Every structure is written in structure tokens, then in C-alpha cells.
Amino acid sequence: NAGVTQTPKFRILKIGQSMTLQCTQDMNHNYMYWYRQDPGMGLKLIYYSVGAGITDKGEVPNGYNVSRSTTEDFPLRLELAAPSQTSVYFCASSLSGGPYEQYFGPGTRLTVT
Amino acid sequence: QQQVKQSPQSLIVQKGGISIINCAYENTAFDYFPWYQQFPGKGPALLIAIRPDVSEKKEGRFTISFNKSAKQFSLHIMDSQPGDSATYFCAATKIQGAQKLVFGQGTRLTINP
Image (cartoon, rainbow over all chains, first blue to last red; front, side):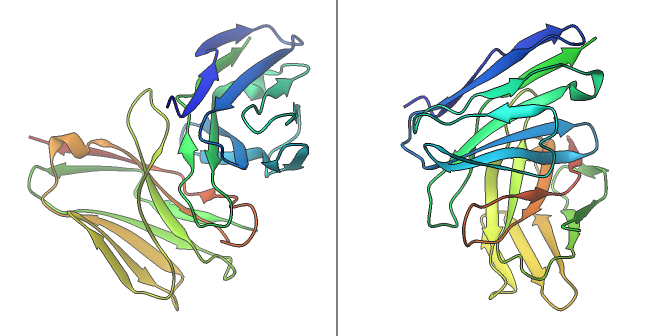
């Protein structure tokens, strides 16, 4: 049982480039989340999903897109990278009908230059 | 605005002492208040959580105190150990539906041996 896995661990992007951050969980959780963590700012919710085919915006969705075609996978897409998207990105998952613990992945450190 | 304010930003405590971190929230609809612990290079992990129907919850050396009327809650770490050195985040959410966590800004705790 690997829990929540994220790839890549680190990435450097040039302004305007695109990339997809991968997130997979093997706990059969319905709920999945993407957060970004900036120094001194805590974690902020970007997008979340309550099940395959269902996604919704969180607090800071601008510049990002998501999809959820399976229960296990919840990729985060950056279309036109900007320096403001330099951050550490965490994917999390939880059971539904809570409250249940959100299990976080190890994070992806992204730098946009 | 759904905001959670956390203080202090950083805290240094001697081994064996008591570490206290405070949080305040604004949204009275929040009904679940977890604390997450994060070690460098790792994702956050649930430490302890409380619902507003109780004023205190204790798990080992960790205690949450909750003051519903003041909309404040705090984490107390008794007999603090060097292994407790980490960043701590308070959070708040509504249990019903997707549990969209609203995080505080985080407290970097250092326990000196």
C-alpha cells in the first residue's frame, strides 16, 4: 500500500511552458485534493474532486486545470507557467462521509523562471 | 472570508517544556478542526483533531483546547521532545460534503535538547 504518490519530485519550468503534475492513490478514496504551499502562507486548496468525473475549484484555481477519469488518478495541469506558480504542490486523498483524515503525498517542488 | 489565523510563526522550546500554538477562525460553519504535523521534505500528516462539541481532546502528549465562543483553538505539546521539531498547521473545515481544509499559516517548532 503506497498511499498517495506524486511525480515528479522536482521540476524547473520556463515561463510559458506547460506541465502536468501526477497524483495517484491506492486507498480507494473518493475524495482527492490539490494544495499549494508557499512559505509563511500555509496550504491553499487549488482544486478538489469528490469522485471520478467530478471536479470543482478551490480557493486558488487560476492558472490550473484538473481532470479525474479514474478513482486513483488526479492530475494537475499548468498550461502557461508563471513565476507566481513557483511553489510546493501537495496532493491528498480521503474517504467520503467524514470527517476523515486527508492523506498527503510527498509533494512536488516546482520552480518557474 | 474563510480564514484561519495561526500564531506564533516560530517557536523555540526547551526539551521537556510545553509548546503552545494558537489558532483563531472566522467561519462559524466550521465544525472540524484538525492539526497537521509536517517534517522537512514531507507532506503534512494528521496529528489530532477535534469537533466543537467538546472543549478538549487529548492524545498522549498532545492536547487540543477548543473555545467555541471565542472561535479559538490551541495545540499543547507536553514534555516536548527534539523529535517534535516540525512545522505545525491548524486547519478548519465543514464535515458535510468535500472536506475543503482551510489552513493556518503554520508554526515552525524547534525543541532544543
